[in-house]
Length: 442
Image (cartoon, rainbow, N blue to C red):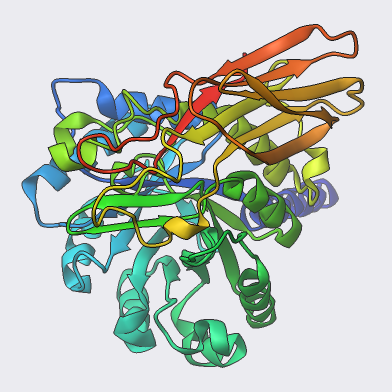
């Protein structure tokens, strides 16, 4: 009898150890979520969570710029209430130090929800997760104090620390006992530039190497573009093929976590979900309106990426459609770069290219297929595509309608993505909108 009990106990302990290792080693994907006013008389909070689940996200990272505001608490409460009914989806806070640099204000809101069943927990201690946007400026001592007092799994964004990129090993010598991991935000796009430039993962590789040596986790950002035309500023960071390029880089670097920037940031144009108008200003809605300029057609591509990332794939050639026989999208700016208005050109406008951009994911073994790109009634290119992730930025975009077609070896059109708005050359509402129109392949 003793032998049987002992064997059962050993099996149970081994099973528990395996489960703990699975929790620790599992790769997770989050979506950065800008907490704004969400009308409680709508089902907007539920739509956001259900939409994120359908794409394959594990959690929203809740960016709260004003943690003491009643509207912020109300929205957070709606999200937690509904997430509590969906066991597969969690929430955690990403303290926004750019909007509010007082960590005690963020801590107060976190304390209200840290024990909620829908709050994401991670790591050997199954601790509530906390991240941030910015926050390197408060230094390791403040973060160490917060971590100790609140017993959290901490993955902040400490890029403001001078050693973070210039001397990553030195950074972890100072910060090692203050964090469980780190999140690089700015590497999700190329630097602002006056000439076309591609995103690079060189900084990610260096920081992750140092994080690995220090026994810390690493989180990379995945995004499409960055364009802002409000609040007294206007800038653009290249987005021609930034999204699929970054997918390749993240799979290759293979961090523990990925965070998509963002689910709903209309102000910086990198949303992939709905941006509810009750929480936005009329100024932002002129260029970042998900009703008139939707980005949801990027979701099938991201879902395919998430599947590959979670399976441990390190090559985008291993990506396959999340569902169906293909996943793809076309995206383009609604104005040519010749569009001008006095004082209107955003910083970084020189990086923009008049191009039709596409990405398509096909099953392994696909052959005889091609993508045909048409702009303003003229075929710009016909390019062969195969299994995995295929993408390109086809220069020469003209004014007029934009279209991408998936064509088989006999010349038959298998699927089409057609832009909903023709490209023009003139400003709208007094400025040249550098946001992207996105159309899904169907």
